Amino acid sequence: MSYAETETASQPDCWRRAAALAGGPGAVGLPAAGERIAVVGCGTSFYMAQAYAGLREGSGQGESDAFAASEFPFDRGYDRVVALTRSGTTTEVLELLNRLRGATRTVAVTADPRTPVRTAADDLVVLDFADERSVVQTRFATTALTLLRAHLGLHSEQAVADAETALAEPLPDGLLECTQFSFLGRGWTVGLAHEAALKMKEASLSWT
Image (cartoon, rainbow, N blue to C red):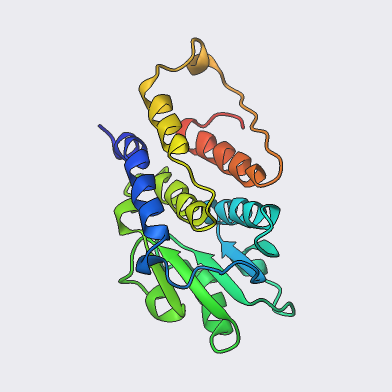
């Protein structure tokens, strides 16, 4: 099996581990209800930031904004900034965290704690079991979102069961012959639609 196949198939197990982590000491530093927060990332991590911010604010747990790390508005005040970076080396994220040091509390969610993000952020949440080798990266993004959903009290085992069903079932007839795909979302799922389109484009070079 390819890295992409292996890592995609492992996602339900990763989600269960992330959900268990969300309520324990491994999730120290994640925002408390009522805090005004910003969530930042680049590429895929930015799309997950959009989804989390929309979900958190939409569920009444606090004002939540999402930004590409390079576009963070330093003239706004936040109680906490959450940074998503699988590698822990994303230049724009590190620059942002270093600039916020001593002014705004920060927490980074990463797959590799042995990288510069360890000292750049005030707190660190490690998802090393969701790190990836595939060029088309999927499981860190979905596992990070599961962690954040669970921390909000909005994760369910049904989501994991649905993923297992989707992985086990054959693809719909005619899907492999399709060359154009459109993904729609509203509210917190807008970020998911952006990410789904990106992944389809990266994996198959389809028009999305």
